[in-house]
Length: 99
Image (cartoon, rainbow, N blue to C red; front, side):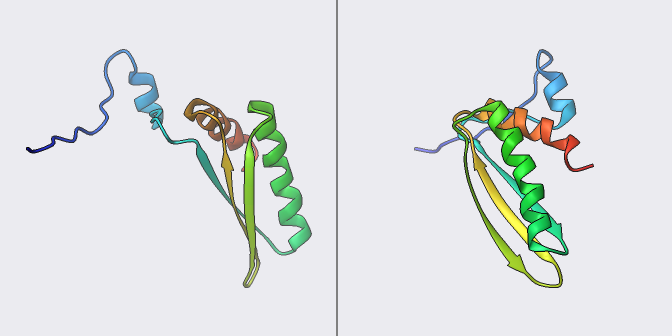
């Protein structure tokens, strides 16, 4: 028996989401954030802004991160939301922080 796997398609009714580049996929609840700074304290302070924003979307958000020291400090984090829509909302709202 063969299985046909179909890629998600954007229909006329949801064209706005497709044009923005976002499609809500089931099981996509984890947002990844990477931050860079010259000091460990600065990168941690910047990440705290992301955590606070994530908690406005869902107070039960779970997060983990690691800091790597190379030429500068790199923070790589994962924020796990309860549903995919919360992750999408966070991703859209966090664009203001990265400016």
